[in-house]
Image (cartoon, rainbow, N blue to C red; front, side):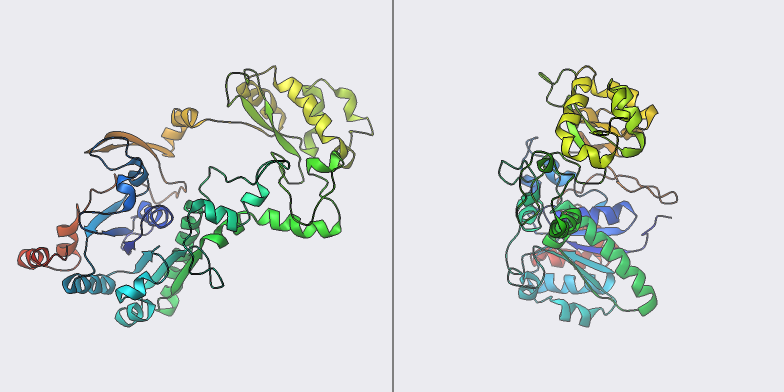
Length: 415
């Protein structure tokens, strides 16, 4: 038995944030029924297409373990089908623009009236406040949630990150909210609303920068490079380049071959507990006793010199050699791995983190499997559905329509 087996999800999501959430629920065994517009479907099906005539990777990699039902909710018959689905399902997930469900006639009050046990989960750009009606995309969420202002180098502009912390990050937050609401329903018997604003999700992932904002009141942030460079701090948490921003200073350093390989780098952390080992490895044993370097506090004003010296050593080694040398000595390091290297890493295939999936239109492709592993709930990654592939199946098995009833819905343009 899978962890969420028996849970029915009415999936009204599209693009990335919502589908991330429902795909995760599907990985854990929920029956995710994705509702799409007839003849159109999720907008990402035809975005960034790389194989003519096939759904894009953008769509396929976010919609595994789901069934697709096409439904025209603008027709009266379509509305009746949706009412039946609300009665049958446990959770409705949506990431429409603000007010879209209300205009459709299926706001929270109506859903609660139809099914008091229904959990209605929503992704929105902002929570209640002056911007709650604004439309938000990934990079806007990163900017509004504090990520961009604290990413990049001090002398450059704010930067967004390649990690989809606004969309996918919020989808992961929403999935936790849904599972929590399902658990509470076991005690209360009642459904509830679950809201995951993208701004909130990004800010949650940037909490250490909010920590530093408050620490500024007590003086300069000594673990930031600018402290050692004698640069005055402003009123807000600054961009810190590749500083770790924690109690153990760290940076990205060049490795052998960096001149030609854009990923020939390693992240190197000068953890206090193994400082002696660091000194031995980089050929500076005298630093272990030198009062200018022996303690973390003494090293803070000299971080540039420390990391320049370490980099002189890492540049003589490949990023993998740095790993092989440092890991046995408990020195925290990590190679900068490209997407090509990750796609070809055998261990990630063995754990199901990278999965090869067959698709009837595009053939085999790679995707990220379930990032969370449960010992008693195995995950089988099932290809994304074709548009409307399971319409008849859902109408029959879930909603009880017979063949004549299904044909009537088709004739009415409802499905």
